Image 1 (spheres, rainbow, N blue to C red):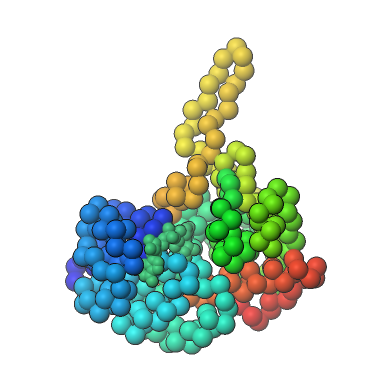
Image 2 (image 1 turned 90 degrees about the horizontal axis):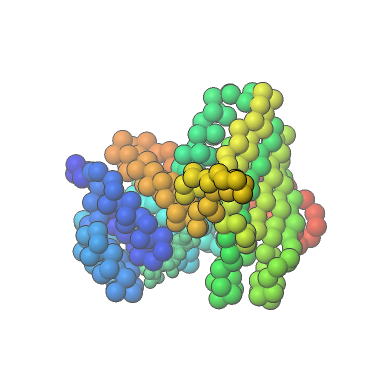
Length: 336
Ligand SMILES: NC(=O)c1ccc[n+]([C@@H]2O[C@H](COP(=O)([O-])OP(=O)(O)OC[C@H]3O[C@@H](n4cnc5c(N)ncnc54)[C@H](O)[C@@H]3O)[C@@H](O)[C@H]2O)c1
């Protein structure tokens, strides 16, 4: 590999633009090919961050100009593009989820396992400094034995109905990040119990989806995990995590854009609302996710979440949907 890691980007929408910025901010990396079927989008990103523009992903893999490719196109394209990356021998960082259909994921599973490239999944929250910091301290034994994990994740406002209609449902679309966060701490989960409700959105109900869900899971060691999700939150993007163990607790509060509070005779004014949404809240995490992947490609070590992590999160999402639909706990023992 050349000194500079040459990066191809497929998909220049919301998250593709974040990745393009991350490449630009990573020393020793260069955006060389930018692909979008919507050529204006690719042109706009290339104008900002460089790279030759193409409109067919096959041209990225055939270019001979990339060492790794970032897949940030719609979910339905991921399986095919990972497959093409394997065939071309090009490392790939693919956005989550791998697919909404576990059968399609499984159709690539053996090939992905045998592949001679790094396949990373875009579970960026593992790279948030707060959550990563807690994870490292739990792993170092600071809490003694981990007994309970509580993940609270509420979006500021729901996506439009057109998005909800094709999202795959809240468990596969939104909770998928929390399933991966749960497995970051407790990889071996054996049981899933979930319940869903429609407490505020008629159009989400119309689409046969929930706007609010609770998930409880159990790890093989008896660890209990609780996930709280809502598609809305009046005070902004609510992202918290609590790890509770025999020797104490570690808790990550929400991240505020600033820490200023006003004190006067009228009272103490609290801080400004939380970060707008994921692009702002996880900006550092996206950057770090790519830096770690590029480092892994350089050194031949791989610490990003993998294809198997992507698959496991989808298995948990499917189990949660089954549980919420049937009212019964679902065993995932041996299925991750
Ligand atoms: N990790 C995260 O926090 C996060 C956040 C948002 C989205 N995502 C994931 O990223 C993916 C993209 O989401 P988005 O919100 O950026 O979507 P988007 O619609 O904003 O962007 C997708 C882009 O891909 C282009 N495109 C469509 N088909 C293509 C193809 N075959 N080849 C090349 N380009 C193609 C579109 O023209 C568009 O510019 C989804 O899988 C989504 O789940 C992840």
